[in-house]
Image 1 (cartoon, rainbow, N blue to C red):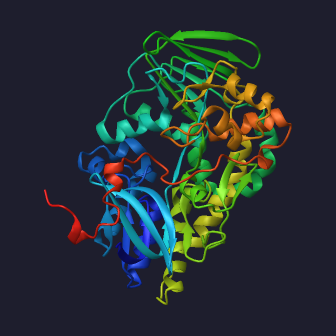
Image 2 (image 1 turned 30 degrees about the vertical axis):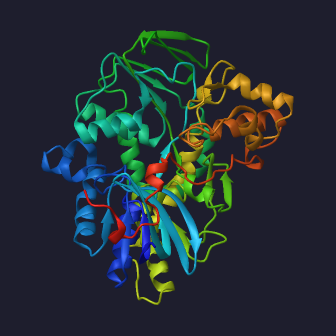
Image 3 (image 1 turned 135 degrees about the vertical axis):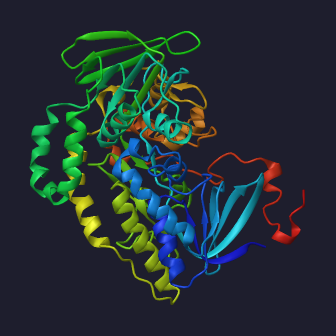
Length: 468
């Protein structure tokens, strides 16, 4: 049998914590399952420890806001379960069962209402050499900086685009680790077409001002900045040794490198909602699939599950707290409790939504990662190259789900997390269809690797669990 609560919240980032606080303050029993060891999510990762060691200033005011948010969450009567990795959700009578791993055992938590707030992850960026040791995403390097104070090993190349890249560059610079070479993947010409969104974006003036400040200081401390890079390649023997690039005007460049960090925006973490068979829509402007949900976050085709934060669509941490609070209040109200989000929820959402069209227009997926050569590995788990996918499509595979049968794309440990978007793009290209009309590969639970030994504990109650 599973233990049972009124509301289960998945994720303890800005959205998950906000949802849990609102629901718990309404007098409901709330459990929060979090993959991480401490609350905060990616944006506020390790914020308590960073504040304690006096490094909070390195990461800016947005990060510092997490100190109070985590403190409020800690002070609320919530059953917080860190290091709990969700592997699936099953529908059940009046709600659903969350399947998760903790301490080497699978568990089952029944909830009358479920709020999914699993955040986002960086858009996969396949290019020649991206699997070499020494090549990693900028977000992964940010995690190392926040959790262990680790800095990129030099020579250090940073390649990317988007608002998060501006923030990351500022944080690396504040920590004394400005990149030796900055490769900008954004197209300068986009600012003219994006200008039509400028007037609306003024509603989020404070965010615009912050972004402009980061933009002006982006190249500070950098030895070389290269604009409008359209091709990227990493090379080396057992690890990264060099980075090569080409710009839009055909200029080639090369540099020695020990570390290459790349970033091309973020996309919703839709692994769980896809495995739940929730309908998803392709947001052309954001170039991402998002689960279909109502204004208060209730997922389409369910009467008991909600989505909040960047898991629902990329809007940033302030909007995430707002959507989390709305989902928490809606779920609580559905169970007969009185709950209401506070702190200018609709205002925060309006400001975030005002700026988003401008950002999406300025930073579409970079050309460096959309024109993929045949010899580029796209499925890291199964070491499958783009040329093999194109060949299978030419042989008759109709789309991503048939490609799984032909090649095993998406069948490794990450369950398509790193290749689903690329495989869908290649299928759309081969079939001459729009990406929005191409299905992502289907997922089954468990959505991440689990052993038979771990699953053997699934239906044990707390009293059944063996003692050490």
